[in-house]
Length: 134
Image (cartoon, rainbow, N blue to C red):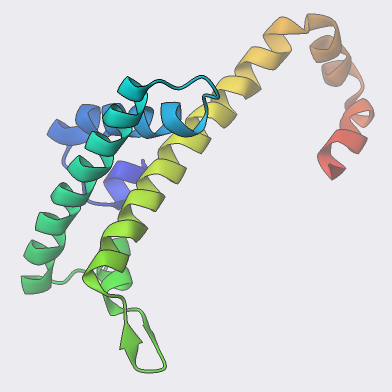
């Protein structure tokens, strides 16, 4: 979904998943290797190069979508620089993909791993009231 919001064509989605995974492995792994660091660096370069070309193309044909809005953000007369635009797109892609995927995955995994608590939450929704407040 985040790839759609960032106007990434469907043919590129798998490449973006690979790039996002490489960055996630870097940040989410205390035992990362030099290969992990290299893969994350290559992913960031790949993402930045892709978005650099996309921003250049969008300068000629602005749209009324997320990218168009980012390009028009102005605060006290200043607009986002090219580097800030690339960084925003990389962060949105990574955050929108990685965190959402993990949230959904953990939301499915946890009740499967703890069926007794899952059954209790279905029969007595009040048991989860304190969890929602966290």
